[in-house]
Structures are given as C-alpha cells and as structure tokens.
Length: 146
Image 1 (cartoon, one colour):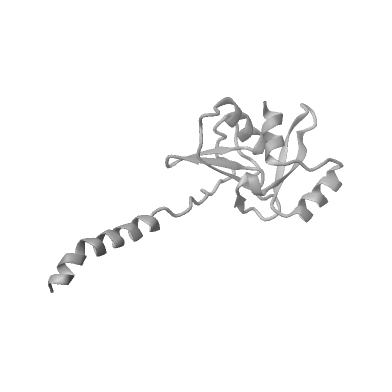
Image 2 (cartoon, rainbow, N blue to C red):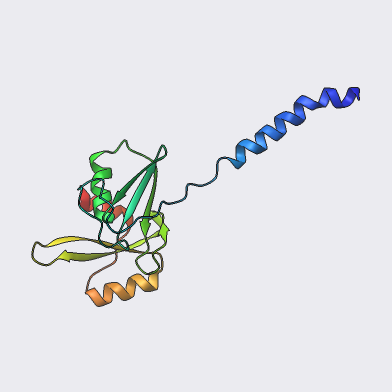
C-alpha cells in the first residue's frame, strides 16, 4: 500500500497528461449555408461550393469564396486561425494548402473573379480545361489578393 501511495501522484500526472492531449483534437469546419453572410464583403454566400472559413479562438468567419478570404487575410496579416476552403467537386472542406485553385469569372458584367478549390488534381485540371484557364496554388491566391 505504501508503494501505491508513493506512485499515486505520478500516475495522476500521467492520466492528466493523457486527458489534456485528448482535448487538443483538430478543429473541425463549421457548416456554411446558402444565405450566410460573408465576413469581409458582407454579401450573401449564394454558392456554398465556393465558400471558405477561418476559425480563430472559437469564432468562425465565413467568406463567399477563396479570393474574398485571401483579401481579408492580406488586410489583417496578424489574424491566424485555422482555414478551410470547400472542395468544389465534393462539397467537403479542406485546408487551402491542400487545394488546387481554378480562377473563375463570377460576373461577366462586372468582371468579378474568384477561385474554385479542388482537392483532386484531376478534378482541378478538368475544370481548368473547361474554363480555358490555368491552375494556381494557395500562395498565388494570396499574392493576387495583395
């Protein structure tokens, strides 16, 4: 019994460490619905397949498209957090560093453009071929926002 009492604090420390590690799970994306408002431009998110989000300190900022989020990040470089873009083909959210982006024209009348994000290189290549454009990475999207 004496040995158990001596080792109990060590055992408790080990259990506490395991409990703490289990609380550091990855951050999951928050569902974006059509009709949600873009954090940067305040316009309505109409196409959720273009939508993106930034989760920082428990707060979620939703954006209409990757370019809109990139402009916000460039304007506020100290804002960190976890970023997600929507894979245009599947509707699932992925980190932008894992995505391939296809430039698109959102409005032919105004010339407004943005990007579709794809996890699959084959899907991205097919979209780029159909739209007669080239593929870009997340860094290029950020550079274009500058």
